[in-house]
Length: 146
View 1 (tube, rainbow, N blue to C red):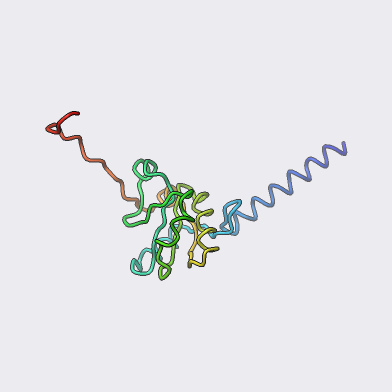
View 2 (view 1 turned 60 degrees about the vertical axis):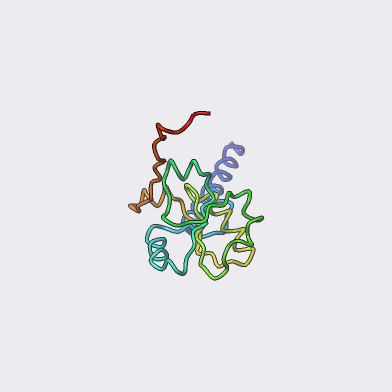
């Protein structure tokens, strides 16, 4: 009986901790604020002041869609690429559901960048936002085969 009560208390503690993170707009493991569609749209309304850092793989951007203008840097390469990121812009770190974006936002914040938060491209679309779909051109039938 004591073990059962202890297990229930541990489970409740974990559940309340996860609920608290969700209420604060944070992903587990990240200190970054998770932006909703309205916050993203407000930032995108000032294109000269914002820059999107998309940490998804190119195939994810192609299959899921992305934002019209962004800087694509894989999360593993982010710290090596900090010198190429402008410091005069507010940054949004994008991934599919904001988990990798949150980690990227933490790295960028620690490096001294002004970061609005993290966002998920798929989450943004589910909330009614529009993503740009990248359609690869059809193969050229006249191209020489090697």
